[in-house]
Amino acid sequence: MAIKINVRSPYFIKAQNASLKAIELNLYIWDGVEGSTPASAQYSFVKNTIGSNDYIAFEIADYVRDYIVTEYNQYATNAVWVKWDYQMFSNVSRAPGTEIGSLVSSAAYLAVDGYGFFEDGAMPSLSNDLLQDNLDIYYNDGSDIVFALYDEGASLVQLGDGDVNVVYWEQVEEYWDTYNGTWDSGGTEQVIGDSTDSSNKIVYVKITDTANLPDKETVTITLAPSGTKTLNLYKICEPKYTPFNIIFYNKYGAMQNLWFFKRSNKSINVTSDSFKRNTIDFASTFTYNTAEHQVKSFNVNAKESITLNTGFMPEDFNNLITQLLMSEEVWIDNGTQVLPVSAKTSSLEYKTSVNNKLIDYSLEFEYAFDKINNIR
Image (cartoon, rainbow, N blue to C red; front, side):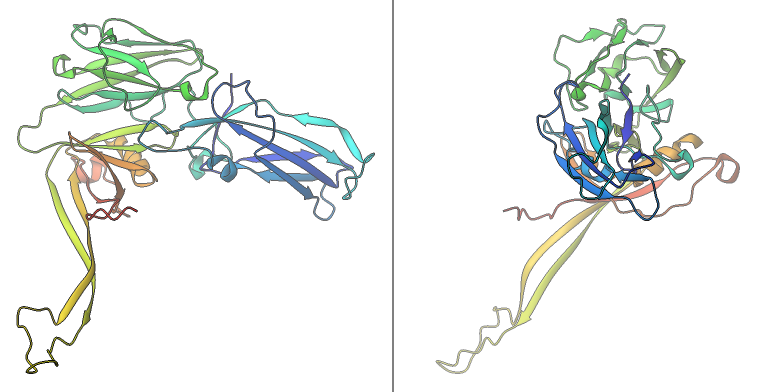
């Protein structure tokens, strides 16, 4: 079983020996098959001990993150392999003959763009099965349902216990994969294998044609050796407002979505520079054209924002809202396009059933591009 590391939080490598004075460390990072270690290291480091310390530590997370591409397209790289080797020396000169033992090599670790909270402690592995916290999923009637699993084998995913043959589903490598006509029926169990390819380690299970799916259906995930988890699927049919789907990278380094079902408000903020100019015609009669701008605008552009409302949700969705606000990559799916946005809401008060009875949130997002196309 590959050890999963989360590189939005620090990850440390430590070498220790009573005679240690210096170390040379090589860091290898790649995507694809686990055994395809690059011939040469992506990074090489040299460090000496400090004072009387008999150990040297390296923090590698930022270097590994350079090779993870968290985008919404076919170039995304959700996970990479990382391993290292190092040679210890008894002298800072690292001259031949001062080596301590032989070269030490690590196993391959799987790095994802996840993070631990302070409460999780140092270098937590976090979930090795379902890559989201919420077991309740609220989805827009007719829209796809997607959830992420960590591919370590021996996982069996079963949809419902009723009339589920009316929908199609499949495990896919990429969140945005669409139904291609050859997917299994909802009544077919999905068996999650154990891939050694980094592009297959985060598996998305996608259910499509959900207009035919009964409300309050369940997905049972059988996990070895930890038992089972059950996802509860709640269909929302919103007759008045247009639902919006927000997609983001969660704390497990997987893409997740959250539907906003209620009222939305769109706004625009225009920015520009200006200067004052003299419009008098000195060559003739010292007149000026009253239709000509004395104050001239330039560099005019704008950014749009949208405020979305969730509708009522369970209290444990507070953690989901937290991860959404802390995500560095967020998109909005308006039904016709998937566009990049940034969470403009930077603070909010958590709601609870005791204090607030019914829990809903209003969040503001800013489209992450200028309204006028100025990409060069």
